[in-house]
Every structure is written in structure tokens, then in C-alpha cells.
Image (cartoon, rainbow, N blue to C red; front, side, top):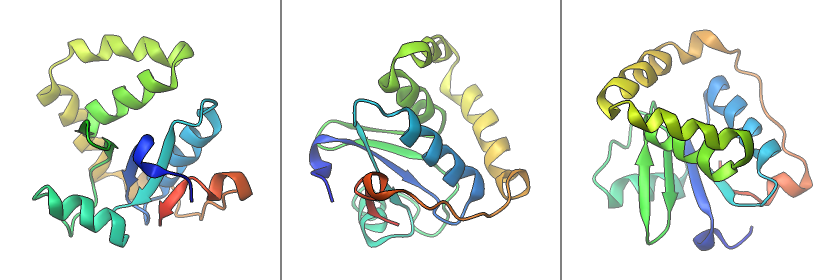
Length: 136
């Protein structure tokens, strides 16, 4: 396992096909090795949630955490991930002009239907990608 304290940590629902698709999508585009991943169901994920007084039994929210700096949730996490990836994805910064309460409504609608949107196929990371997971 890499030094997670210097990375951006993406917390995701480990049982969700859509979430696993997006984890794989980020992995393939993370050319600067800036991200690591942990499922919300893992001990590490549960500790993150508990320490912040966040819901520990419902896993419909994506979190992006930069240790000792910040964490973002839902649509703001998605926009920040795109911005960190850079390149063409940096254009997502225009999405920040949309108020969070509106962009989070879209996020919540997708989240409610995520189990219907993607099959539950299992993502198998390669050797390099495995190092980027804190716990699943």
C-alpha cells in the first residue's frame, strides 16, 4: 500500500457497479498517481465516516478526502476529482458555478438509481492498481 496520507482518497460504495466503474475510470486517467481508494464499507472507510459524524450504514455518497486539508461530498467531490485529473477534465470547473444544492439533486437522482444503471460486475485491478487501494 502506498503512502495514503499524501494522496487524494476516494471513498466509494464497494458493492455498487456504477461506483466501481468510476473507480476504474479514475484509475485509468490518474497519470500523476494522485488518488487512492477505499470502500465506505471497509474499516478505513467506516473510521473516516465515524470521525466526521457522517452516516456509517448508507453508502450512497462519494467522498473525496485530502488528509489534513479537506473533504468534499457528492457533486463537489466529482468536480474536484475531474479538476485534479487535469487536462480536458479540468473544464469541469465550470460546473462549480451551479449551486451545490442543485448539482447534488442530480447526484442524488443518479445515486438512487445506481443499482439499476450498471450491473454488479466485479472490477479486478492489475498489480499497480492494487497498490492504490487502502481497503475494499
